Length: 304
Length: 325
Picture 1: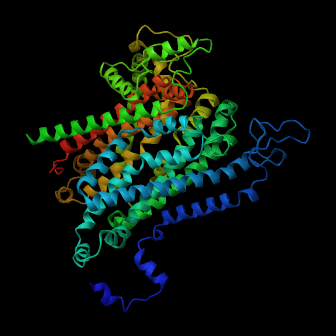
Picture 2: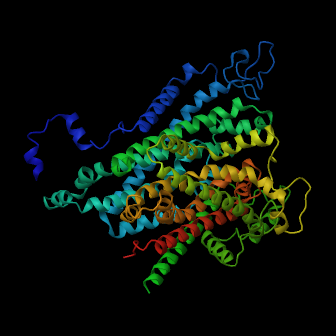
Picture 3: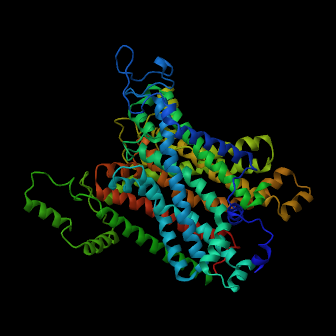
């Protein structure tokens, strides 16, 4: 009811309206660690977008030396290959650069899907309660009983090998954590005075959810989303490493599998298997750092 | 009386989850493309022989009846027969389970001892340079692909320095009279060092961060202030008063960690050719040995579900503030 009174003094226009509605979506710029995380993301996004310009070779191209021999297992710097070549004569640096594409693609889609499903499930269960709550939370119990990585392996074995298997598996199983947390957040929001007021004033459930509940659980969705990016990238790496990945796309996990199967460990080809792992760590921990930034927005007591 | 209803409700819930997971598992494997017997049937078999074989495995029955037969067999501890080993899956899976459990528990115990001590130390040193370097570092270990860490340790300490064997549980050709003889042999522990280190380095982050944040909460409570006022030494305050209370939630997280670790074992067992459930699952899935894959998956799921139950019950038992209204 105070809505109509104050709205006269508020700046109008689409942008201001959106800002008011979704003001809770903000980047955690107050936390130095989160800023580092965001910078890492910008770096990887640029790398993925400009991969064709940065990578000197096609990542699948079999290369030859100037003497027309297979450019196999060249050490970094030889013949201008920055990070050397694989046993089959492919440029490691180009594979690294192209790997950023699949990592980001999988990570961001999976995070979006997990956060979306988890938020919808959590809000519906928490807001409506009753049988909807019971059904959804028992489903979450079941999802908690499914071992995730084995599930992805079995799923990947009987679907066509594709990078989307990881996203599908995460959508089927990993919404559980987000769902539970958002449900309990919704439970506390549901009984707040302003939600009561909106209900008394005759707002529909949908309007209350979109206007009062959703904006307030969004930081939580972002928190779980930024963790899910890391989970997706790690899972994709594990699946590719175990040989259930997409053979047509170059990912860092695939590179590690290639290196492992080509005895790079016993040959001591650190230049081959250290960089992909290092980049995975970098991008996944960037997600963790950003999630800590959101945690501090949500739970300021962690600020010390 | 109330405790019994709580335990009863939890047990019922666990039984429901178990049944649901078994059902999902059954239909997932039945919906796989191709005949489930493709790996079993010799191309020279006549159609009559194939039909006979289908009948022997009950595959000529309607799906719902297959499902009931499957449930019935499960209740009798029958998980079917492995296509590859031509031996009962239950036997095979139970033989591998100890290897996986030993790996999981030794690495987690190591991780928890280290994590609890380091977490308490970092909480005590909060705001210091040490803490500001260590916390992001610990987050970084959580971001590592476990198998990559394993590869790194293998390359450095096995292939590079030659200190540790590259995989397996025993030297080539070594035979032991019993499982106990194997597990108590020095060779076994030597083979286990690198995989355990890999898993421990990955898992220490959880207890460490939990312990640290719990300690920081507890240190602010009245009884800790009281202890300080009484003039007790910092050591005594930190260890005898704060750490004890911060430890409870960390201990309940152990059960959850076992559940997570046993799923993650899949990759680490593969890197170190460790004959456990995880590696067997990967092999069974890639050779289309469906009964074995199903059995290994089920075994891992049972451990996960049981550990969730243990965590729930421990949580309720240890923390009197948790009520089940």
